[in-house]
Length: 100
Length: 310
Image (cartoon, rainbow over all chains, first blue to last red; front, side):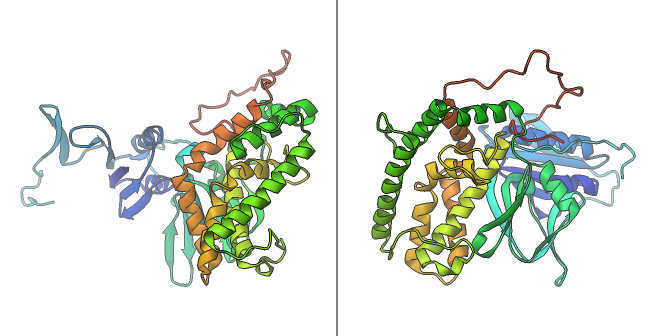
């Protein structure tokens, strides 16, 4: 099981992801792919994302039961805490904007 | 278009990592932003199909296909099969067979030499019935033994599922002519032939060069499909026939897809093809020493060996 979430990526990447995965919400893709195919899809994302950002999560044998990789800039950045991977939420540069 | 203009080629993925098939009717198959979709002009709806994750796509009456859609399907190595009533095949387009000359020559060599052909046929018999073929029999005699066993198996399964059975009778031109069990069997076998053909092509072999079957464009596909027919689609067909549903063909199809998933048939088909041919105990021919190597080496591909990578 593998999930991809994209933000602000060009339409051609969104179309390309839909060649193998199912877009269940805008920019959210799901599929059941092997490791090799997952890496191939990730390569496509890193090459075609331009200024957008993306994250890919997949079920695997870690303590959390999944692992993930990110590409591009996003206010949620992965951090590691004693071997557990968590996400840090960075404040907006625009102080009026506290939610998201 | 982006200013970076990165280009990432689109490549086929192995058959074993795919889902079996999807049937599409009524709609215009097209490509939007590089994704394969079915456009319903009447309601303005679009449905995206992950075509790269399918072994084959069955197009039913009412489907219209654009040039871009066929191009995308062929780039990701997905077989397009045009089917008629009840999913009985009419025409297919995908990668032409025999993308690998060494495989093609190997297959032809096995089929041309009588003693090698017999070895292959004996292996098929063994895999199909789970016991070695009787000694000192010709291909013809083995076909006779096989026919008798197949008739018996049909009778047993019909009895088991409580279906009326008067033998395998069907009119390829008129699906509705057969009784319900035969209708379900025709619908089920055409599903199996679809995924088997996709596997044979992806492995780089020719669908027409058969060992037991001959003289048909899909002889080898029938050979391979017959090995697994009775553990996959035949029980499914009888199961559906016993229920006498109003839409037998659709029910059969859904049940077939389930049985393909649970029996992991797509993982097994290409190794099965290789195992059958390996029974001849010869190696694929080496290219001649003075042969001209390709001017442009084939790019790396994660697909199967017979997938043409653009």
